[in-house]
Length: 444
Image 1 (tube, rainbow, N blue to C red):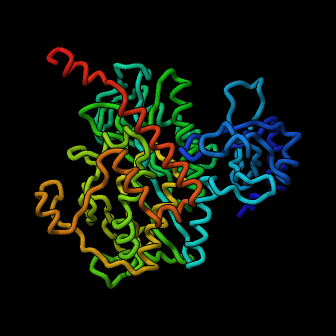
Image 2: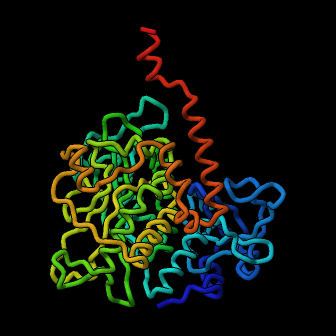
Image 3: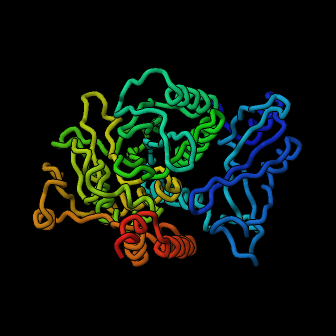
């Protein structure tokens, strides 16, 4: 297996006649940031990092402490295709953000994930992730929104712009070394999904950021607008990011137990218990926008209640049915996150919640066999089934009280995220919407 170290990057850049290298990193809200160096600066950048002004990056630094360092991760190097031969070949690497003295910057989302992965590693685990990111294609981003098709779930629509866009996106991802498992049409009109192949959580967070950019760039190249907005259409299913996850010890799946009725180990059961107990606290991370809560409503397949099941897709957590000989595929699927979250922070809080359940031996909760949406409020209460926050403000208030989440994210990032989300909520609640004008202006 090729070791992707500094020497390899330099050799690959020379072999492919790379002229520019794009250095990528992510702010606390999950927006991809980038600046570019020339090939002549590559060796120095790999050795010493590259300085930049962090004061303009959301959540990264105050004005008086704006000097930051971006340290490229050689293992993330790949060649980027160019729309113009005149511009030459480009490459990209993800970076870890450092303080001027070389120490890790505590508010770097990639660092937060790496710190939580170390916790898992110290317990002997490797964390694997397989997300399913849904998104929409629209003819433009200007309302009224017009999709490209009227297809439904897994529909084989005639060859059209949308199916060709998916194929072009998959080819671009594979050329960047990102493996794709499958793609298909989703439930809502003009809604699509491309599933990335299972891999370790850090690489998957990098891949998720790349995937979102590639989907948008391929669409833009074809004069189409792609969006990962959780709920762009009223009365239609929103876009989720169902996250399949498992812990391995070496090559052994720590979630599998052949003797258990559910084929779940004690580790898996306590991991599920951790997710259920802390889900309401981490919803602000996995569903961070005002619009996220327009998706988390009953009736559109998105989970609302804190329950798990073996088959039912309406529950917060689903455990896919075990198939003999497929022990390595035993996994847990968390269905509440949406694709507009920051994947580094989202994967970190999921892992932390699960590890909390394992370390503190949370009590296992039996799966729900009925459809939780058809149960009365009294029945759910009697069964101990709670509910996710109903809006951003409720999520903020729950998260604000969470000492566990503060420890998971680090106090500084935690505080800045809360502050940012409060501003978003204040801006949202002061808006007068078209709904209010249509409903109330004629009669009040």
